[in-house]
Length: 264
Ligand code: CLR
Image (cartoon, rainbow, N blue to C red; front, top):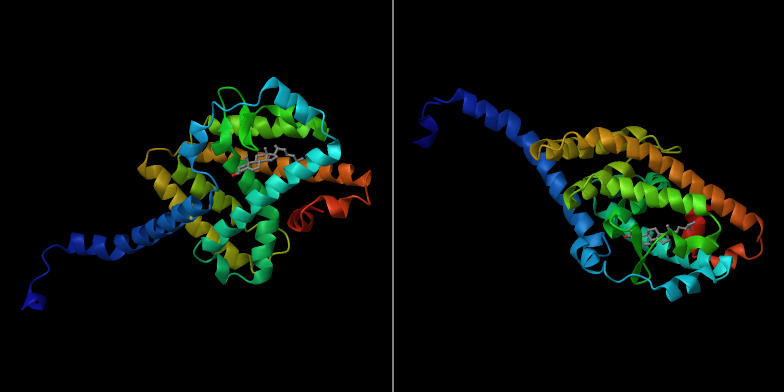
């Protein structure tokens, strides 16, 4: 009978028993995260690249520049909020995220959703001419002039430019955004350990994927990016505060509720 056969390949058995399960679980997680990214990334990357020829004309740029600071903030806040909603959906589809307490889900999204949007921005960014996809066409930093925070805009564009230089694949963007989101160092987490466990599973999955495609060097470059993300987000909060301080009454009617909830 089959189970009477001698085991003459102990090495193989060991590999199957010991190595296979760990590889399989990390591959499963990678597949889950890549699928979640694909389903929630708003635009496919091929679509975005095919649209790169659509650039705002001089007249269109001037029209943006002559908008009031309030209108431009409102428009940008709506676009950002819209893309944040896709990030919330991304998070919910990551295995294990919905098993966290509601408090911790909110803490992670509050701290990480804008960071994920800023990473995702590199997919919508054309590094050849420094333009980003915004309201149907590609435009440079000059489109956002009337916001009155050129330093923030310049830093966001520089960040995207430097991220583009890493030529991240869709799989890498998916895994990196999951790593960014599941940051166990966020303040006010109730169960830091549980987040740390989830984070390390994703981290292992990411490292395995990079190793297999001989892209290990990307890892150290991405850890610098994590620091830049943090400072971009605090700069955003700063600029938002100064904007609102001048317009305390306007604040509540201007922005979508979710934008308020996340940043004010
Ligand atoms: C990021 C990737 C998302 C789609 C998307 C939506 C809105 C875009 C955002 C991307 C990139 C950054 C963006 C934003 C709208 C306004 C913002 C262009 C492409 C600029 C940088 C202005 C920020 C102003 C703040 C001060 C509010 O899948």
